[in-house]
Length: 324
Image: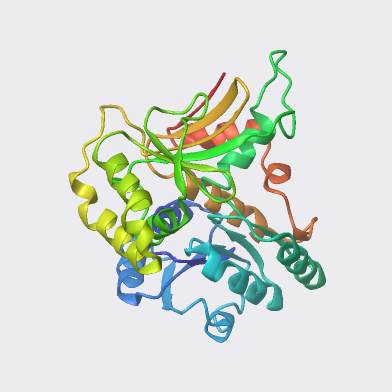
């Protein structure tokens, strides 16, 4: 199979490239990034099956020229609010299956539009295959047990989704920019979540960081610099990136944790290596590249990855799922 990986030089894209290059069922992997030098260096370091290309994925014409002969597109490009819809529409127009990392939700009306486009093209797409959304959706669907050990598609009470991450080891500029622009204020620690400083996002989900410099700096973004508007938040994201190396963390802090909490119950996926989101993206890309397609349109992630499969992916990544 032939897979096109967008945003290959980024944090998640690079990890996904390594995973895809190792798979025997991937015959050709094209690494695409706006910085072609990074894409070229990565491709040459991985495998002879890898090629590289440059594209501004926000421009449909630049992306469409790369789609000929492709079995599936995997997008690790961020911020998703700026690029995801354009990427998906370009793939649907080219009749190519697509999977995206996703950092937020697509509006219902846009979701229907995208679903219709992929159905018309006769190919599938899965959005939100990262940590949040992504692993949070799998946890809510398959691991939120109710005492008797029976999992339900959604908890009976509203669930709080969160992403706890190490600023020193997780994410790149696009991710930190999304965090800086999105947080609206301090929030309580969700049930079963790692200890730290948590902040709320507009959709009710939460972002958490270890206590110490990381929490202090994010707090300042909310309370001071963030009030300066978009320019202040852009500066804050850059500051987080430039100073991330000096942020000490408690021993044993995971690279990232995706979690769901509802009432007294919780489920969390602890990413000990920083590759769990990339693992999900790569796995779904390979599945969608398989032909013929039995399902088409915009497909729910929990219907493609069950509890047993999710557990296997986590264990293969050297990570773990904790429930309570």
